[in-house]
Image (cartoon, rainbow, N blue to C red; front, side):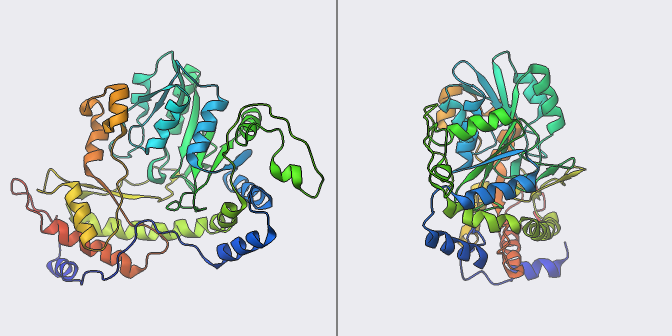
Length: 407
């Protein structure tokens, strides 16, 4: 690397204010919509939820959408609607948030992990094929960081074994695969609108499906098993009695959440374009450091750029991933870890009895991964602060076996 450029990074002043990781961009349209929602008196599930659902339906091209209170709820509802329960197995990735596997245990089924591809960080279809059994009832692929899984291969496996595909699209608002949006690539999909996501409602989620029967089951399941929701019961069209047709759940989204989502969704394309710019700057800057940058997006796909994850080359330098996390914290740079592998977590170790090496690619990533800020709130100065901090940390790390830390 050019010495002058390296010196400029190393000598750049440390940030004075902490850069919060994943801080959402909430603008005036969301604030105004929230105020109008509060003034309206309709703060539960009502007209704004309906607007948000219709907008999301139009955006994704899904035939049926249902707004719920979290992606976890969406995944749980998908499993219940598919009739999955005790004695069944559901295949998913161990490189995901706990909720993906937790909901499988909630319905009494057994999570079965399949290793990831080390380049894409997505579940490996060959590993799905290796662990599938007659007890398998569903596959939950995670579009990790906004990168679409190999859905052609996954759907082919699912079809051959007569199992359902539930997309975990928590990272994938805006992801496109072969011309189709995430959320339309399997039997059911679950989106997240948590505070760090590309579309933010504070919390919240969305179920999408092209199956009318599944959509109706999920609608009923999502609100106590009632035949009519509150908006329909108490709207100006007149009172309607409800029937309890199933012991359902309290998973509905509120109009207060939808008030944010309506305008967040309107800006999603604009925001992905900004994320692309930040992503490209990071890719360019980190070529000379002992890190693995994210692999390019696959042909005929669009990466939603939700997470920018680096793998620290701990084989080249005498520094651990956690050392880097702590050093960035000291530099006033917020970070994340996505994720510590699920098969290493105490509950799933005890439940499934896996050894760390059972999923070598997942273990490799789990030990090295770090997520750095990527948000539409970031200024160009913020981005350069992140880059400079990583240069200071990694260029000063002692090389292993004489390997240079700056490439």
